[in-house]
Image 1 (cartoon, rainbow, N blue to C red):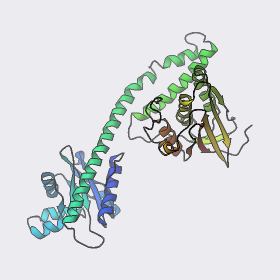
Image 2 (cartoon, rainbow, N blue to C red):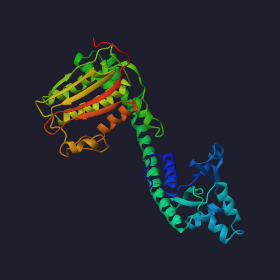
Image 3 (cartoon, rainbow, N blue to C red):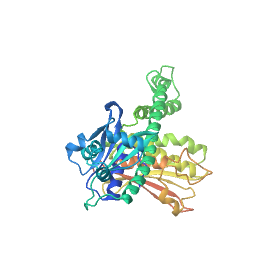
Image 4 (cartoon, one colour):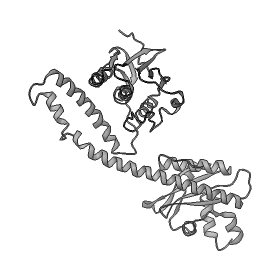
Length: 381
């Protein structure tokens, strides 16, 4: 019926589509409770004029709102007109104003939260008891989906609160600034090895700080800054970031770094921290001691094809379709943080208009490739 949405706007649009699919109507709309306006305002609709999309509303004091709040049942205009043409004229006027032949209440925590308005059928037929039963079922389905949408908003707010407080160490007065001060020489000279390690830590901290700010606004769009840029530094830092782990696990890590004059259309920071980092972390986790992990690239029809390849146990064919879904963890004995790494890679590549693919089989290496457009046609140097 109505699947779980990510926002109230998406929920309202899905409800309208479901009404169309079930009843074949000329128009449909969803009016949402707006406390500061003291009314239910249109949130999504179809078959309405631009003026109606901007103006349709019903005040909390509307007679039809009072009936829906008290009865909790669907309301049918034909029934009102046939049984109580005089006594129900105010309710009928409300229904006509929002172009509804039928209306269903949708509740949240016992409070009337939304109105599902169903316009006339394309066939001209009247609504019958079977339609009312179907409308009631659809309203219940929408109510469950609404609960999921509101819960998601609540989780988003909690995440924003946490992000706000967790940003503090990264701010101008936070402890992470000590890394910057150390690199600046405020605490005396540093060994070169320590300087290189702290430089990577500073880069990671800057990435976290930049995107932590975004999390304080759950409604903000994902920050993606695509430009024509080399990926040289991203590959170099990725090698330096994972070399200590490779040495600890006795894994041979080979990184073929693209040259500075090879420009790629991408957000280099996201490619480094969310694509390369996640793919390398997975490869390191699944490659046994004595194995190899290889990172590289090739040019193919004006496309940059980066890859991370390992000599781990491989992936079963039946697991490939769900590999990039959130929460997927194929090996219960060798789990990652939350099964979100590959889903994150897919999300970043989709934001770039690119793609991520995998080639693997049990007992063979796994090879993940990510594809981006080239900024301009140049040699590899």
